[in-house]
Length: 298
Image 1 (cartoon, rainbow, N blue to C red):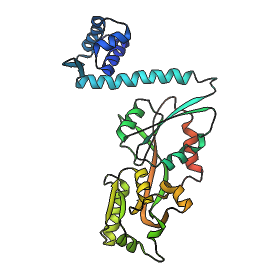
Image 2 (cartoon, rainbow, N blue to C red; image 1 turned 180 degrees about the vertical axis):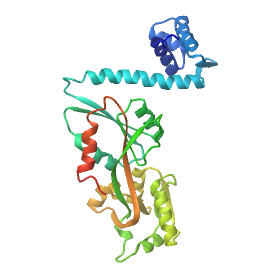
Image 3 (cartoon, rainbow, N blue to C red; image 1 turned 60 degrees about the vertical axis):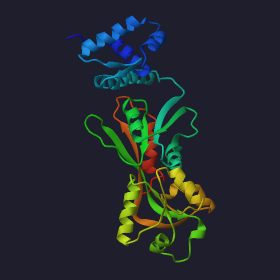
Image 4 (cartoon, rainbow, N blue to C red; image 1 turned 90 degrees about the vertical axis):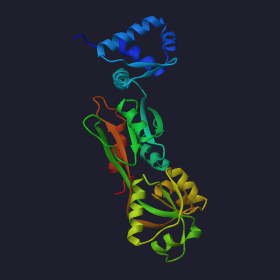
């Protein structure tokens, strides 16, 4: 059986990303017929059609999507190999970090602190959804991803999730909301709350807590973005249920106040990587800082 021709695979990948044979042929300085022949030979080798035509657009078949996933991984790994093995003698090194779009910016800054300001480091920061970030990590387009829940892993996608930070979750709001001696039950009964959405692990913990206390709180807002929760708390929309690190600056200036830690409730943060033969060496100081530094709160 003949080996896979990677020239065919490279041409297929280019067309798949462009979605247009004519545009790809012009970009690669090839004739359309020559490019079509390369794609046809790959389809013959794989035994499946990779595209179907819809009007003027080429759309990937199911086999085409699988082939593109593998092609992206193969060529990304090749690019990483070249970059990694050329690092000897370089004065600067890049690290590509992805973070959940809704994750606390204060947490991200604390996590990155060990490499902030280093003249030998180029940081590339990206945000997105969990699926987008894990896909980029798996394709070797990111070195490490920051999430607030560990991803599911199996033998096909062996993500390595390290628990790097954990903080209590509290009721946080404007100082005018407080009164001396107010209990947790009083606070929840008297003031509206700003909550994470139902998909959040913190929300599940909060719902279990108020059920135990037999309280039905008034919900001012349900938000999937910690930055927005912070703004709503600052505007006095209600008592926000979040980790104090999210509003670290406001707590220090006194514009917001931590009223009560919610018993048994914590927010966890995870650094996710994938096993590599040549891991980015900048990952290690980041993880070591969370293990030994004051940032780690059990």
